[in-house]
Length: 588
Image (cartoon, rainbow, N blue to C red; front, side, top):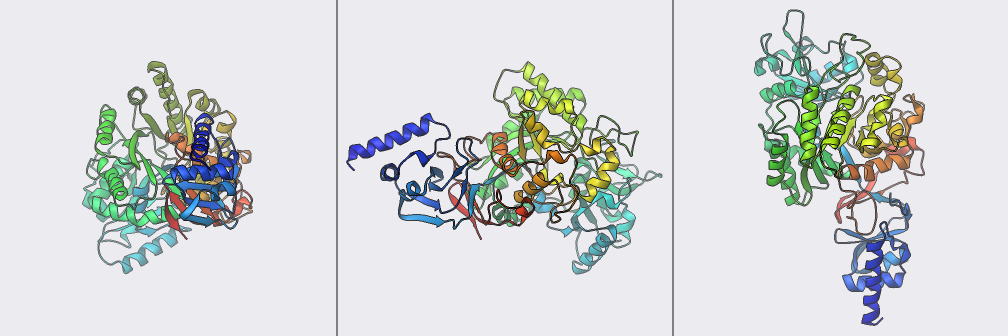
C-alpha cells in the first residue's frame, strides 16, 4: 500500500470510531486493520478462537479482540484482529473459552474483608460446632487475642450471643468474633475489660450502636453497629496501617483470580481517625505494581456530626489518588441490619413489635447531608437495609435535585432488602442506582427462618426485588458486599451472579427458590449488573464495563460459557486469565 492509502485507511478508522458510539472493528476489513497497525504499531495482545461477550448494546458478540497498551483497538472478526499482530504480539488462543469484560464490584470491602477473614472462620452449621472450633483454635494458637468471623444470627435467641459461652472456653484471653453480616460482634469478658466497657459505659449511639445489656444492666458481650464495634476492636487489637497493608496484599491475587478488575470500596476501617490513611495503601500498592483492580472509594459518614463531610472528602481527594485509585463518593451508613433489629423499617418488626429499628441520623440531618454532598457535585452511596432508610434517602435525594443545579447524578442506594412498591418506582424517576448484594437473595436458612421472623408476611415474601427495579426502567448494579452476608460470605462475582439468577442456595439444584420467584434475573442481566451497571454507578462506563474499541483493556477468560451452561453450574466456572489496564494480572 502507498503511504497515502495507509493514511486514508487510518483516517477512516478514526472517523468511524469517533462518529459511531459502540463502533466495532467487524466493520473494518483485515486490510484496513493491517493499515491501522502500520500507523499506530501492532497490537500487544490478540484474543481469538472463542466467543467474545462484549456486554455492549451495539453488538453483544464478537469473534476476536486486539489490545494495544491499555486500550482495546479491535473488537470483531478474527481476520481483522490477527492482521494487527506483529512479531512481539501475544496471540492468545481462547480454544473455545469465553472472553468477557472484567467484573466491576459495585459494593465491597477489601480491607475489612482481608482483616475479618484472616482469623477463625465460623461459617458453621450450629453453635456447638462454633464453640468447638473456637476451643480448638485457641489450643493451636496459645497466645494473643483470638478473633474470627462468620457466626450466624440464627444460632442465638433474639437478644443475641452471650459472653458466658466464650468465658467458659477463654477466661483469660481477649476474644472477639464478627457476625456474618458484619454489623455485630460477640466478645468475652476479657475483651470488655480491655475496652473498659461496664454497666456505666454510655452507648455510642443509643438504641442503634450499643452494648447489649442484661436485666441488671451489665454488658452481655453482644455489641452492635460500627461505632460500638470499633471501640472493642481498637481496644483489643488496634488496626495498624502495616498490618492492614499486608493483609490486603495477601488477598489481591485472590481478587484477580475471581475476575475482579474494578471495585467500589464501600467503607474502610480508619487508622486512628483518618480514613485517608487506608486509601493511601491502595495508592502504594498501585505504585508498586501489585494492585490488580481499579479503586473507586467512598469516604464514610457513620454518625453525626455531618457538617464536615464535603470538606473531608475534598481534602482526601487532594491528598490521595493515582491513575487507578480515586476517592470520589460519600458513603452514608443509613442504618444497620435486620438481624440485630437495627435496620430502619416502616412497620414494626414482626417479632419485636415495639421496634422499627433506627438510623444514626435524624431526617433533618439526612436532608442536610445529602443536599450538601449533592451541591458539591459528589455522589452519595447509601447503606439501606431497611425500607424506611430507602424512603428517607430517596426523599433527601429528591429534595437535593429540586434545590441544586441540574447535573449528571449517580446517587446509589445499596442492599435494599425490602422496598415498598411506591419507592421502587422512584429509582428510575430520580435516576438513583439500585445496588444489590445478589448473593444475599437465596432461600437459605437465615432468610427462611431469621428474616421471616423479623418481617412476617407479606414483607418476608417480597425481598430483594431486583427485576422490579429493572422493569420500572431503573438501573441496577451488583456487589458482593464482602465480607458481609446473610448466610455465606463471598468476594467472587460468579457466585453472586448465580444466586441473582437462581435465587437459590449454591450447591443444591432442588433448593427452595426465594419468593418472589419471578424476580430471578437472566444471566445476561446479572452480568450487566456486575459490569456495565456497576461501571455506570462509578462514572466509569465510558472507560470500562464492556468490550468496545477505545475502552480500557479489562478482560477475563472463563473456562466455560456461563451464558450457555446450566445456571446452577456458574459457581464452578474458573477464571483462566485476567487482564486489567492491558496487563495480565492473573493466569491459572
